[in-house]
Length: 435
DNA sequence: GCCTGCGGGCGCC
DNA sequence: GGCGCCCGCAGGC
Image (cartoon, rainbow, N blue to C red; front, side, top):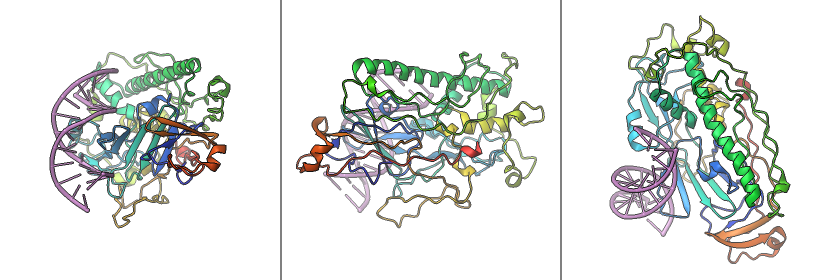
């Protein structure tokens, strides 16, 4: 992404005004700087796939968040697909404390307990995210590279809460369908918001809408408890039409087409013909007080090919396994759904530079015996963009500047000296082939 | 109940 | 002073 090219820092007295923006990245990792349009709903919410909590940096202009890490099993058990348990820690301290010590929800786990794997990716401290709002853009900067797997998607825990709080059902397929429907609902609302925003912004001359970063789309109109459908690959969103921004003749014209969609997930359908009024205890899957003992050696056998959804519908399948696989993949409808947990992958991963001056800090390994990491570079869908105009802000002040002017600008006031480029590396979905 | 943002306060460097 | 972190509070969902 833009690191290396961009010259601004979130703490600069003034930040540039940019005319083109990055598409939102939910899983920004490494030292990343991005610029989002002010209409980007995710950016406005300071959303992140990582579990980020607010940190007081005593700067009202810059919102700072630090990573809470990931909730893992103390026994480091494996899921049926060979991956590990990596749940999303609650942001609320109280809720997070409640999470810890609970039995590992993996039915294949023997006695494991949930514990927080703290993030130490920034020189031994948690990775931090910074958000700064200006009139014309939302600046994002991340410091540090996460040294732990991605937690489950943000929506997953919400889905579980929703399911757990709702009527109890029996039947994994139905549960999955409901989960998907809830996630669908969430995504639908998100997209509807974006659509309405698109209209509004066109009318009110706001920046272009965010192109959804997730690659899936609601494919049915089922209600949350009637859904008979499942995720499928999204048809690429239509590129933003630049000429809908008449008031910004110099801006937004280069707003990019969305990144190519991730490799499509296999079409996944569920038989939801199960009785809807059966009884199911969510905790039977999510929280098992007495994990079921393995009936086979874990390390050897759990590395088998993940169960497919065909397996799921097969009477011989272990539904909870398929559920776990699906949970890892699809819950929440976010990027993590397309990018399985990093521990699924081999040993070839080279952990990125830590960007720490004090290199002596021993970088924490999540599963050191396997070097299970994944490219911690920037956000995945980060189209390269050109800058045509820059403006500089001093916490709200606006000092317009275009490229021509910049050639001669002495930067006596705005501490910004070189061509600003929000380009950043186009993330490669290294995981898609495994989906 | 939980998420989120804000802000006071403390300790460390 | 900068930073990390804890805590409590309040608004919102």
